[in-house]
Each structure stands twice: as C-alpha cells, then as structure tokens.
Length: 343
Image (cartoon, rainbow, N blue to C red; front, side):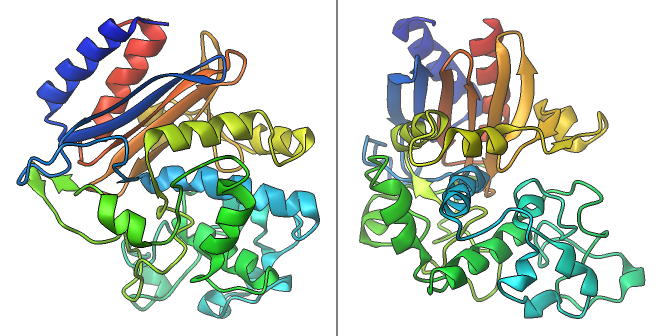
C-alpha cells in the first residue's frame, strides 16, 4: 500500500496532465476504505469545489451493482438464472424474432444475449432491414459475447414485473434490498432531490456539457431505473458496496461464487481484452489475472462521466474512482499501472 502523500502527489499530477475537472476516489485494503479523496471542481465554469457530498454518474459500473441485486432475487427464488426470460415476461420489442426466447438472466449478465449495446446508438447490418429504433439480434443468443446494455434494460423490466413494479418504481425496491442493508447513503438508480442538489456537471472536450441525465432511449428520463448505466453515487459508497458484495453480505456465498465465476472466456482479439485486460466475464463483472491474484473490474463511460473499479479478492484490496469528464479511461490505465506495478 502506497502512502497517502505519494497517492496525493500521483492524483495531482494526473489531474493536471489529463485535465480532470473533478474526481471521487476510494482505495480499499483488507476490506476497509483506507484512502478517500473528493477533489477538483464540479464545473469548470463555476469552479465550485467537489466535496464528499458530490454525486457522480458511475456509468457502466452500474451493471455490477444491478447484477448483485439480480443475484439476491436468485437467492430468494424469485428468478432462475437459466429460465428463459420470456417465460416471466414476454418482450414486445423483439417478439418478431423467436430466437429471443432463448435469452436467460445468465446470458444478460455475461453479455451473450445477441442484442446490440443500444439500439439507438449501434447501426444494424443493412441486410437485416431493421428500422431505426427497433431492437434486433446480432446472433443467436448464447453463442457469442457482445457487450450489451439492452439486455440489462430487459432484465430490469423482468425484475420489476416479478416484484409487481415497473421501471419507474424499481429503485425504491433497490434501496430496500441493497442500499439500506449495505449502509449505502446515496446509491441511486433513479433521480431524486438529493441527486439534483449534489450532482456534478459532466465535461467533454474540456467543456461543461450540462446533460441532465444519461439516456439510451428517446423517452428516457431520470425517473427510469437505469440498470446498465444510471447509477449515481460517490466513491466511498461504491467501495462500501464492493466490500459488502465481496463479503457476500445479503447473498449466499455460493451465489457470489457463481457471480464471480468465469461464464465466458474472451478472445484475445476482443476489444475489451486489448483495451482493458479482461480475459473473461462473470455475471456483471470483468475478470482479469494480475500478479496478486484474480482481479474483478468494470469501467464506465457515459461520455462526459467516466469511471472504474478494480478489486482483488484474495488480497481484499482495490480501488474505485469516478470522474466528471471524458478522460477517465486514460486515468484508469495510469491508476491501475501505478497501484499494481508501482509505475
């Protein structure tokens, strides 16, 4: 574990060189938060300082937090990982393609549904003759890996349906089932007054964007439960979540083991493998070998907010960081190299 002074110096250097406006970061050692900083500015225009109450978008790190929620439902017998989801709730958005009936929760959580990442952002093959805004399948579900937020959106609707809720009231259940038991003060998948008052501004290309909420659908707003990228929080709460999950609080150890087990091995030419180092995927987590043991990790990129975490279970150590700009990916590479390799 590097000293606080050395880490402080590293963060200052990286924020200056990369032009990070704001940063919320927590370091875990022996399953305790041993270092935390909330630094920089919430908006480069106003220069208001980031503080411990500042809220960031975690982007795709939302997927791990949602996967834990799903596994709690599995523990309870509400959902089976391998039961086709259409048996719980048919999905009109893709009903024209019968292959969708193969999709299970397991396939969603390890990205084997065949869905695009997002239908509005990814163009289908022209041979499929798919109208813009329609959902489609890139391949037969279960046969390949393709990272997809669409699958998480479908599964969130299934979880809501099974709990007699909808996508706009699911966060209340999440608070009850996850945030409160794990002692997470501000860990929200839907908008509320606290977020509105404390959320920092996102930045792209050195300018404040002012986007109110991450949206993958034209009709999406802050009332939706954003399973794939809508979680808003700060680094210490996300670190507490990671510690609680890895200590299998709220779920059986066997369920956690299933979540962290390799579900799909990534090809060495996969973009995620080449860019991030993950060699496999579990349920809501990327898996990467390190000299210190297997690391579980996930990054996040909502454009003007980027984030990352890494946790080595054997060492009970790791980090979480959240930025309010488009330089978080490069920062993650530098932070990972610094903490793992000392350079």
